[in-house]
Image 1 (tube, rainbow, N blue to C red):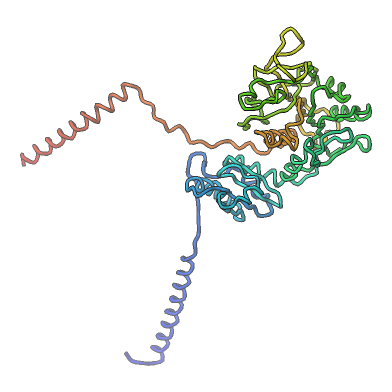
Image 2: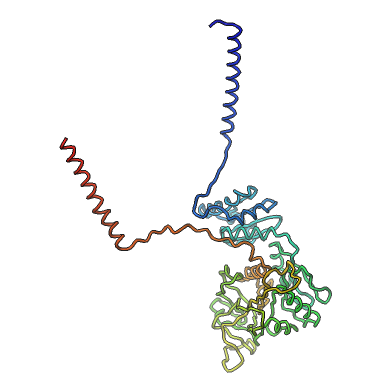
Length: 455
């Protein structure tokens, strides 16, 4: 080839094009080496994707979320946790998951109150909560509780010998108060003789006062109820503490005596004043409560219908219980000829009414909720750890604070994939498989053989 000015220009242009293509190919290979993940859920109803409500919650969470799964070296269990958490990490990448073997980290197990294998601890903004059942509804609602940032308060009445939510005595509620704080709830005490009930009170707790309340304090309570406030009233046998007018306002009456439950002997409880509840109604407070609850020295409740209130039982004793009027000593048995009442007996009532306050605040949205329980020992420092007492107490606080309306996540299910056949259809399929299909193949083979032979 003759080398001239034109050929040199062509060679130079060829080198430039080669260099450009080479750099382009290298860049393309680098781009292809980058991992791009695309996921699509083609299952019916998008069963493997979190709901829109969960996505909205994850979008509103401003800080990272730390999840700690206390699970042994069990591959199926850990895989189940990873699968659930991965659905959340798809929409919030800063969710971290750590696995801890509870057998090798007993100190962390005690510090974080872990009780079962596979329990998940969720931490967000310095608060934490444990869930034992792995589901989107449980995890999402726990995240929503931890993300609460409002001025709603749980106020405990004080000044009359009530149980102290910050106290350390056996009869106080200090451990329960700490658990409420750990759940992100704000707790304070109020003495009605010194201050009025704050307007931002979302739930008022009256925990068995031992001193009779002054008329002014009773008046504040009744006004609070009239204005649509939510109330948890824990009482004890023979201790109305001047709250008879409040009981009359709510349509509640207290039966004389202490509830005695003969079934406790089957559980190894010798104290006759202890009552156990093993079955619960289908209510938001007790729907997921699958363990017994223990109530020392409970008083039975009955209702006197009052216009505007709807009353339903929440805690009911077994049929082998009764109200014992005499002293709990010696031989104790039910006396049908006395004023003693045979079980089943209600020791917990739910009272609801539509809030009608003219200036309804955010503290009392929708339906007014009140719970009266004939025992306060079950939340005390001494008995809080018995059975499901703690779970019941937390459920009460959440429901009375309207936290049950967080998110109602519907369980996503697959469509009906079961094929049901009648006897005739089963017979046709069976005969067709055993006789019809082989006969068809035989006839087809004979036809093909005859045609080939004629050729």
